[in-house]
Length: 229
Image (cartoon, rainbow, N blue to C red; front, side):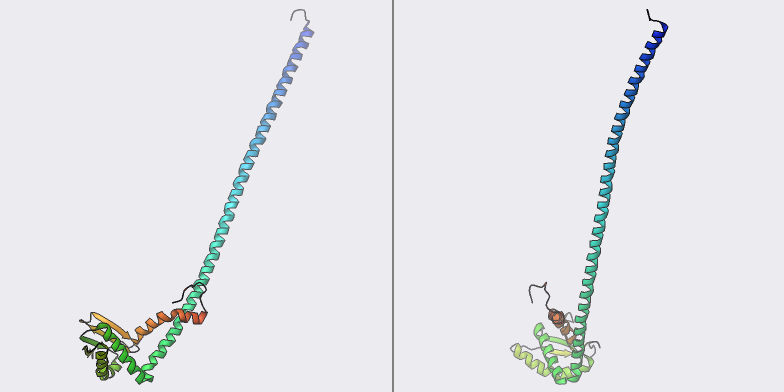
């Protein structure tokens, strides 16, 4: 540099270097500050994102646990109800089974009552069929009894039907099974049409009809039932 001594030149250069260093340091600090600020902002965003994800994850877990708890409670309640209903049904069936056992004793203990019952069951079957030829099946023990009742049954049938005739044939080879309590089965048209008037069938019919009353008698009225039969 003209007019300047070497010392002055060196001093000027040193001053310029110091200025550049200062400016560079400030720039670096500015960049660092901005970078730190951006880092903190990004870190904050990441933390918030993870926080939201964690909250969502645990909310989902809590809902799953609550749902599972409700399902288990519902299953326990349903199982409990089913057990109660099953036991109620068992009690009803036990009562009806007792009635069946009592009915099974009637033919042996009260012959006159069973005789009238057999007449009525046969008459009902004949009136249902209104056929000129009918085959009767009974228990083997009732074979002679039904044969002795045929004239009276026919006479009553004629009165009910205004003189209509019906030839009744008693099957002397095929008898009702031993588990039948009593009664009669009527067959016609080559056994294609059948009327089952055994006491077993009547008990089944009565059982179905009486089950609501039996349940109410045993367990009280059903609060959910709005109408009665």
